[in-house]
Every structure is written in structure tokens, then in C-alpha cells.
Length: 123
Image (tube, rainbow, N blue to C red; front, side, top):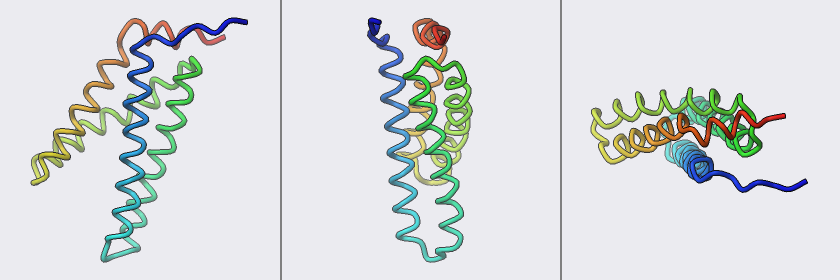
């Protein structure tokens, strides 16, 4: 059984979503560590940890040609755009614009033909 190499769009998407997972984990840990209200921070941290885990599952599923990975990844990307715009408008433009650009790039990549063909190859 020979293994085909992954299309560039899939490799780039997997890399960008993995970067997002690492960023979510970083913000989760740093947010809980620097919070005044640990109880409230742990609730938000738990949410971000849940999102990071689901994106991690999506990355592995995308790598393995699973069609459900597109939906799992896309849902967070749309939220990422909304959250990024709100963050940029609330006084943290660097984080907000970065989130919008990253999520927007992933949304565009998720609809490229090589990635769509890649997820249709599941057997």
C-alpha cells in the first residue's frame, strides 16, 4: 500500500490549525496563571481547552482524510473571525487582526479543490 503525499493546501491548513491549537493552549495557561479571579478564569480556560482539543481532533482527522474534519475546523474559524473583530475593536488590534487573518486564511483554504478532494478520499 503506497502512501500519497498530501497536497500543499492540506499541509498548510494542518500547520495553521496546529498553530491555532498552540496559541489557544498558551492563552489558556497564561490566562489562568495571571487571573485575579481563578474560578472565572478556569471556566474560560476550560472552554478554550475544549476548543483546542476539538481542533486537535480536527487536525488529525483532516490528516487522515476524514470528511467531518472540515466542519469541526470551520465552526471555530467563523467564531475566530467574530472574536478577532471584537478583540481588535476593544483595544487589542494586534491580537484581533492576527486572529481574523489566521481564521480567514483557514476558511479560504478549507474550500480549495485539493483539500476538498483530500477529504473525499476517505474509505
